[in-house]
Length: 157
Length: 370
Image 1 (tube, one colour):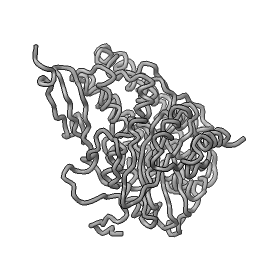
Image 2 (cartoon, rainbow over the protein chains, first blue to last red):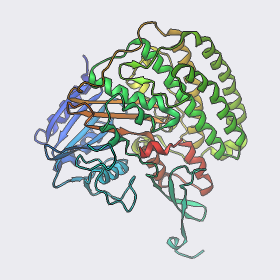
Image 3 (spheres, rainbow over the protein chains, first blue to last red):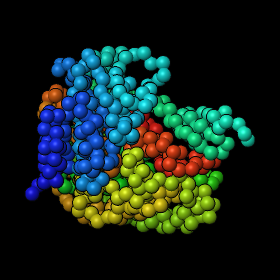
């Protein structure tokens, strides 16, 4: 009985894209995590929005897995009917940080992708306006949220 | 008049001085009185709180998280604390959950009072309303000082519960304050929300339709005043909210008036929530001990909380160290600013209406910058 809706959603994604999904699981009630291959993310995203009803974009961010030499971009989405949060993840190599932009699917990812771009240096292909959001226009200090970013204050890692 | 429209466009740089725009600059493209484009320029108060949190243990982390929204510190701290608790797999004691609900709802009232004052100021030159609402925050600030030790920025929520117990002897004073505040709310309604000047200023201004509100990801009261009933407190009840009877405020209109009035109605609901929480608060322990000097379990937790401005998400990823590996904070204001930037495309906006529209979203720029 528990987490039935979540399991159904995961099964629907898995059966639609058996080769594209690297991982799809129910984390806990109201939380699903789906990891997809980078080249098919737009197809999966459209399916998730149109067929599964994840119509409400929450945000996007990234994680720097420096030991594994990859970035993970995470999109946070909510279904306004089922009230389930889906985390759509895509792993990209750290030395070639390019991912397709999901702004054609959820236009509200605009600001979040811009922030991820300036904080991690991940380029989102197809983004209409990939410019600085929070950092100063003339910022040259690198990408602050990367793990190899050197802090200059006493906080040094 | 025969000029090309492109030649008639004037770009106005608005801000970043504090009065009116706040710590943000907004580029406004205008054609005469009509607003064609709104381009928010953010980052004036960017403090890299996400990076700071990677260098703090989970007990220290509560402090920088609270600096995101100074009028709504409890809800910010709660999102972080709940994510930590989910990661550690602990549930706070029942009494702590009720204390948290009380403080969070007081913070919601404090925040909405501030937003209401600013909204009133922008909507018809009524500085008196701002002064009333500021004065009416005082009794609540005194109560908070009595409970937490400070008037704001409490750092009162800790992983595992709350910092100290709720003093039962102030319950009567608390209930009296609530009754007084309900009378004040009635005054606000008659003096401001039934005010012809304000109605003329805010009704049918900056209309956001429900489908647009969902598509653009509007958060909190700005979403619910477009007729969409999404509230984290109801959809995935946290703390003691599932044991408390309250309504989710939704209004169908989606204009600036509705956005400001929805906050007013939420204050009315918050009073009801606080009253129930005070009356039903169980006795017992108020904290479970959580050591900051232990390694965090490997894994991740994504906690959502309904803050005053809307859904606040904290996603903690841990690699098994003493400090979180990564903390992603999703703030409501950044999302509402995106809605504001898209508003000229879906609704006719005049330059003179812009202050009302901006303040109807109740933005808090430090929240967007983080």
